[in-house]
Image (tube, rainbow over all chains, first blue to last red; front, side):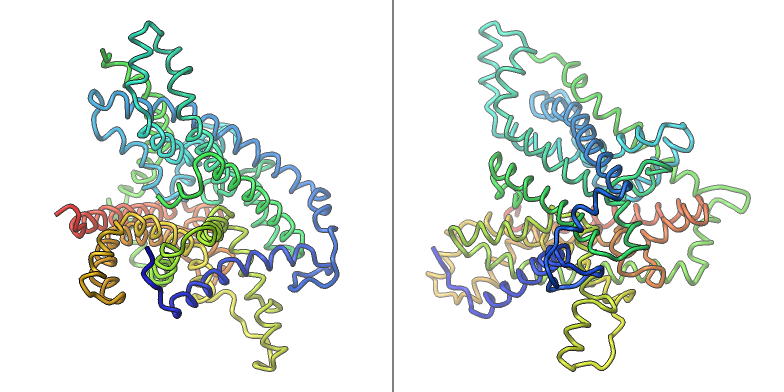
Length: 262
Length: 275
């Protein structure tokens, strides 16, 4: 069915999409420009700025830290998040309703407040190593995503299948790994990938938790921008956008991008 | 046969992690702001007693409100168009909205530095066209912060609204049209009221997101347009005034939670489907 849309509305939406995509196109152009300053359209084409990223040790190191942090933090989060999401569905009757609110808390507390508080408690008061604090911060930052996305696939799972397996003599743990987990695999992959990109791009939580010698890529980018304003920043941005493209491809293949509008 | 302890055991690791590493540190932050030799509320008296700090809070609220208003308006109208498009074109539009959303805030704010800078793209274009005789200083103004924030949050508003609009049964719209309502009347009397709770949810996300943001005000506002996020950082890491920083943190948290609770209550009351 199609109620006709007013042409003015269509024109408005077209402008909005131009506004959304334009700045990103500008970054790609600026990254390719053969000039020492940021400009668009690019003047001459070069890949020099991309190789320059890897010549700056601060970018090399923070990139490694960021990817490692995103991978470990997300894994840790799923490790505690999947059982929690499972419990919230399977054991709904025996668990109090406020329990599900616990996993929304990281969303209610502003990220920057969480980062600042964790820095005071974990790094300053308890003397935790910087990387450990960062890892804890990132794992908690993405926990709501993990629980929510896994919950969404558990909501579509028919638990009578699990009961059937158990009643036929399959041990509970084996049932979880052979019956439940394969059925929520798409959700778990999507949760992983969305949490990964959230962690990779995070500024507000990492801001206070990075310290001497250990920083993350977005924090390093912010610091770099205050001193230098060359196309290297644009090149790093393009690399990060390439990661976004990969993430979108995985989400589309697992849950479908329409999941994000729900 | 469900064993009572099993559910608790499965939920325990995540719950304990949230309690130890999130709830306890945030409560500790709250605790440091009360008490002290100058009375229980001295930290807040200091905050609200300072003209500069009141300006920071006022500016942050203003920027967040304007960002929310523009994002909701622009996002909802765009979402309405997206929800009426079918097939491949629709997937492309959804991708165009998701892509910026999944791109980091530093990258997206950086784009506006390149556009709005003194030697930026906009200034170059204006000079080339002869519209201005010397470059305009657009950076480090409230306007530049708002533009970048709207850029940050419009995709979120589009996707939230598309979700809400798709949830409205086609039958209702057909019924309205077949009973003689014009498209405009259908929009005003059917679509909009049904979408209202969803719009409020989106608006809350935009408001709290911009109220507590750091990277965008830092890059596009700088020292001149200090906002709550950048002020919190400055207090904590530049002047090492942890009580002052904690006070800012508490105000941010209280405003966020208050807005979420208030608006979700209003959204629930407005939900025609629940009546």
